[in-house]
Amino acid sequence: MQEPSLQNHSPDTKTALLDAAEQLFARDGIAESSLRAITTEAGANLASVNYHFGSKEGLVRAVFARRLGPLNGRRLESLESCIEGGQRVADLRCLLHALVEPAMTMMKSQDAGDREFVKLLGRTLFEPTGELRSTMFEEFREVGERFTQEIARALPGVPHEEIVWRFHFMVGSLAHTVAARHMVSHQLECLHLQEEDDAGIITDRLVDFLLSGWKGLGRAAHAQEEPEV
Image (cartoon, rainbow, N blue to C red):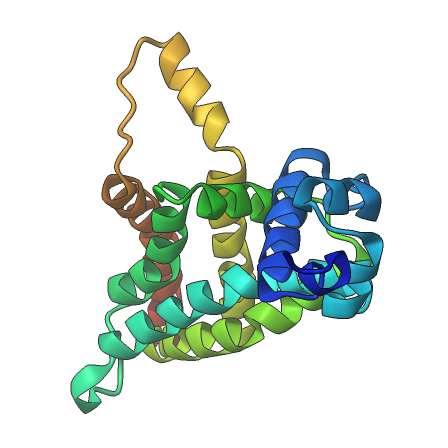
């Protein structure tokens, strides 16, 4: 049997700490989840947090990076598939689907860890601390820049400031869908309406909603460019 100190320095301990922190952060919030509670849940000691992450802030960053990295990687891969073949302008629906679908798939994943993280992500988007806001910005920066760039190309003539605001609204809609999934479930139940529990159907509904806002913006910009008769 390994010595306790070696066990707490093992890769398995690091994963256990990440899993425990993710679960407690999603349930109780980041500020309310103490290192002692996390290490107790993980079967580790306090020194193991410092060894693997340096601090609680380092642990928080690692929790988000572990799943946001692959999530945003899938988004960027899907975005690139929208512009394959050298075409200059991507299809707008394809771009929106590339942003939304990976999060919806994670929300409906069979992996309990994915589902816990989606709850955590939704919660923290509405309750960000200064440290977490910085972490989230860094994790989403490349995605935000690439998607706003391609959306701007798909909507020529629309001011960049408007693109940024609409992208912000879009991310808010996506975050609310993820964070408040239980609300629509409860409302549908109260109205005796059937709930679609398929990630693809939810994705298509949200993309249709978002697309109407972007297309309206594109039509408005085109109308402004037309000369008066």
